[in-house]
Length: 504
Image (cartoon, rainbow, N blue to C red):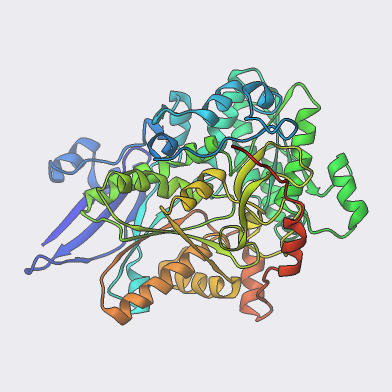
């Protein structure tokens, strides 16, 4: 018989239909289907009648009311960020030139849950809750007994998961009277999310976009400009940090570390300006946990528990957003999933970097953070997944990795785009280059299930669409894409410049 579970409400509804066979085994009759509120009402009538037509035991998934802070539940707390001049733990006043007070508090918070402001939650309703989708057609293509689910964040105005943190960051700045924010961006997903959020709250926005992505993805730049942002290629002649890089290498492709240096320099030198970061920092990862909190409820509603959770990692915000609430449940002993981060072979901070205190930017303007790093002046080759070209991993993810609560692998970009084509031609969504890494790892695991006959549940993070990344797909389809890997010599040279910090 057929059964339907309503998994999201308000502005969008995610509906999953499954057919229960006589032996009790569930087989999917289709994917989750998104319908707008209007279409949903046309199909089913009023909301009251929708609820009446469904089993009384089925409850809509709500937008979370709180963000989850994994630090509160870790058996060992992460090492603190350090002031680079004193090598002592950073104090709130050290960060006040860059961040508003509330975000500084969140950065160091030990509270398990932090309330989401009503104004932020209202804006979340433009795209949240986001759908959890079973990739039935990909399963069929791969001929695998595995059940593959993906949490799709591409329905936000900016087309990715990034507004989950850009909205609260800009809101907190606006509450403190800040008039302008500055930031860096790689592929442009973060920059466009921040520009979108600033347009809602009336703040000026200035963005330094990594030169390689600035050239590869002009429509991301136009998207930012449409929302009112001023966009510069990085390195630029505007800042001292940018000018220094250009003097050394006039054709520098840039990096996230360089772009961070430029944005931080401008914020530090202008009293009316604050800095926003799209990944790496604790408060950013905190805001992204709306993804995992929703996903836990959605999987519970259909009676599934993930055996493997897969996400791409650059700075780590998307991966943390999905995995941290599940790690909480793993620490409680409620579930036992393998949690796997996937990074590009050209920038393998977790799998090839060292766990050490290092700067978050190239010029050494940020606090020292203990993280897996390739060295703060490491400049990755210009792969198409521009959002993953960062020299370090989020300190909190690095700490979780050191505790053995997750694992990591690196995959080259050609294999990633092979997986992306399979995904697009079966599921219909063209992925951004960043989540193609998670897709490739998911396909690897699904094929292992085909060999072993295991029907594992694989959950992956689909953090955004690739509508502005079609030039990368063109290179792949024309056979012009090449795999870029890290240079051992370049990494050794970069690691030699990592600060030597000795702490008791």
